[in-house]
Structure formats: C-alpha cells, structure tokens
Length: 98
Image (cartoon, rainbow, N blue to C red; front, side, top):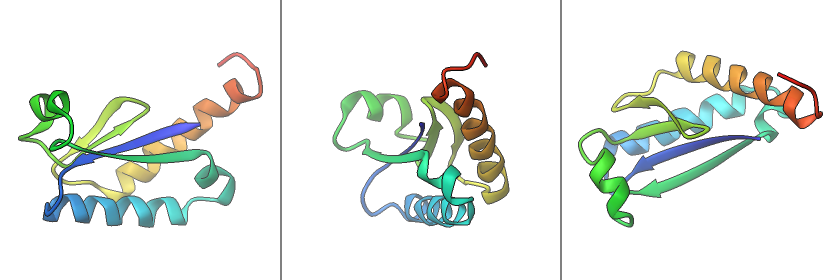
C-alpha cells in the first residue's frame, strides 16, 4: 500500500485546492493503482508536532512519509510520483525483492 498524507488546516484555500488535485489524480489512475493508495489527512491544529514542522508550508503532501510537495501541488508531478510509488510497492506486496 502507498500512503498519501495531506497536512493542512481547516479554512485553508490552498489545502482545499490540494485536496481537489489529489482526488482528481487518484480518480484518473487505473483502478488497481488507485485501490492501493490510502489517503490520510492531518491538521496542524490537532497536532503540535505537525504544527511545529509544517505551519508555514501547508498544504504539505507526503507520500509514504516522505515530503512530496508543499504550498502548490502539480497534478502531473503527483501522478508520476504515485505511479512510481505503487509500482515500487507491488513487488513487496507479492513477497518479491525490490
């Protein structure tokens, strides 16, 4: 499984835009790829550690815990990163070496 995490806060216009980009990109992926992506959201208002790390950069997008983007999210770059992450995870899920 590939985990995509969107870190933001309520009433954040750029966070709403990033969420829309994520939804659109995942919807365009083949079903098998889309089904292997877990989308999580987190708010800097609910977690002091997230606030300390990311307050000036939201929205922040992490893919499998690694920073992918902040502030603005490129659909093409996200699509490529998710396709690569799903492709990399596939052998591990079948028990094969990467």
